[in-house]
Length: 366
Image (tube, rainbow, N blue to C red; front, side):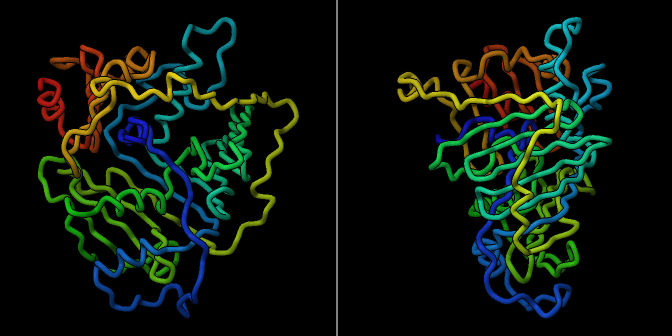
């Protein structure tokens, strides 16, 4: 399996980048005109063929995953906190960094996004009296945390066309593509009523799992009628009337952003860290034995990722954040959300999926 195992655990760390194709063709006379009739299959094809690669906009993200309040779970380690001073408790800096990541999966967040192709992107997460940025301009990637007054610079290989790493929020277009590319055959695809998102007329695709063994009830994706760009995603958990996860453009401009948006100069007095890409070793190029590689059991919405103990990154199971948020259960500890469950087994394995705890415990026993 090519993807790292944690990409299958969206309730722990959802990847986020801005992607698409180049905007071509004419737009409707009015972005709010009712869209012409299309079937669900035609809307799927419209989204799959979207070439809207240059744009800027505002994004709102709301989560109701049932994750405990950060203030209660993390004590004094608040999201965005800087590294601990010499008098801080051991691990406080690590805890603060993990809290910042988890904070993005709780409550409501707003972001400003800019894209000019896959290698020029900027995402600004606007918090209370603070800002977090990920800026990519070709091979140069900067991250910026205004509260910590700290920046990190990373230089990518000149051949890299991969999406911007460690983007701090989930944009509708990228998340929608992850759902749409995995829609068949485990998913029933239908059309909901036409809608308007960010002032633009849109179709609404409704993705419904064909199995009752998943925590996901349905996913609604609004697809721009003119460009095929996904404008919003709502993920519904079973037994909930409101979306467990929502991300949507609230404003959208389909013109290329100014080049200055992708340039970044750390302010005076900021702490700047140069981060080096790890150098692949011969050991990394040698495939691990079958029993030591992450594996997916099943397929579709109720698939379960099983990560052997040997493949779990060192320190993961003992991290302060997991220690405080995980709940003891027979056979290990569990991190539960309304959409994803993660079982930290006593034998060191990690099992995760959009399934109930009982499904993970049954998989662990096999």
